[in-house]
Image (cartoon, rainbow, N blue to C red; front, top):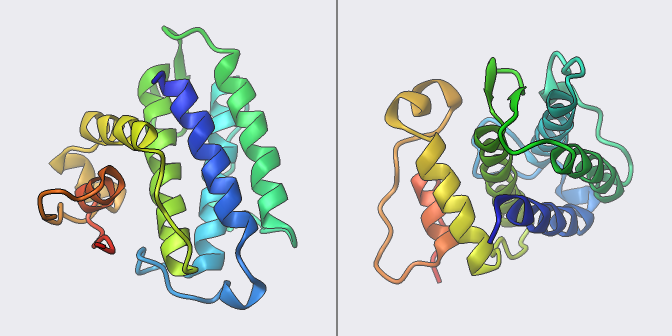
Length: 187
């Protein structure tokens, strides 16, 4: 599966998860200890917004975590994701972009977009009692992105806890979230 196709599928999945959040779940805790569902929604929407802006060479939001969440966050995320996906589709694969961490190859930045969105989709799904499962092929691409982008040095400043061990036979998405320091809900 191509990276862009995996991102497209992840955006679709995330939009579906966000659309199912009930208003009384906005203050629920998430696997991201510092954020409740409302704060994680703001972060997720703000980061995807900044990804699209960075790809297009536009100015970035100063604080993506301060993004206002609209009354219909599913529609809001869908619109932002569509804009960002169109920006990625317009870009040459060998291009360089600045998504806030300085210029980097577009494929690395897209990998960051993929792993961040997939992981926070799982976080939100877990916090709201939904399934965080991704298609296994998509989850495999997310895991590849994690292994490419997240090193021990990156964990220290990017907010990822140390990898959590998972038993043999864990799903790929369980492996992804464990790699990023979360404790997956194992079946």
